[in-house]
Amino acid sequence: MQFHGVIKKGTGKATVYRERDMRNYIASLGRDDKDVEITFDIGKRKRKRSRDANDFYWFCLSLVVERMLELGHEVDKDLMHEFFKGRFLYTEFLDETTGEILRIPRSTTEVSSDEFWAYLEEIKRFAAQTLSLVIPEPGEQIEIDL
Image 1 (cartoon, rainbow, N blue to C red):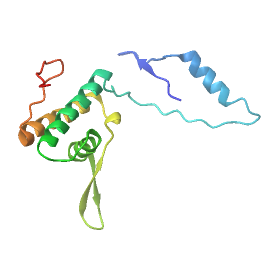
Image 2 (cartoon, rainbow, N blue to C red):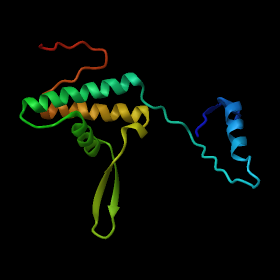
Image 3 (cartoon, rainbow, N blue to C red):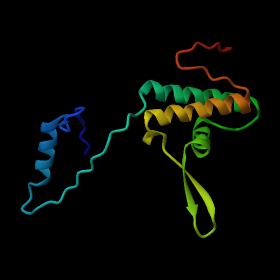
């Protein structure tokens, strides 16, 4: 279970949102006849992308897929999603036995809002340079031939 809160600037005092729910949840864990060990995992909360940002991302992928199909490539949005994560959104590890650098794709749901928009800019740059496809900015109108 996750509960969120805020530390007010300059005070060092935390306010927990839904504090009563948190207290009730903790109490429910300790209702047995024995002690129960629990863990608090506290860290700064990353801003996640909004629903609009998510919708825009999948719109961009649909434009890329359409262009790739025009060029004769059999792709879909899920395949391009995995391709772009592997190309632009990854963590690198060194395989000390071979000296090879391994890239492990990251989940788009686990990155901060700023990281997500930087990732999206890489996709837009790729689309422009490799596919001659200009992806519009969010809210920018485009013409679609029907």
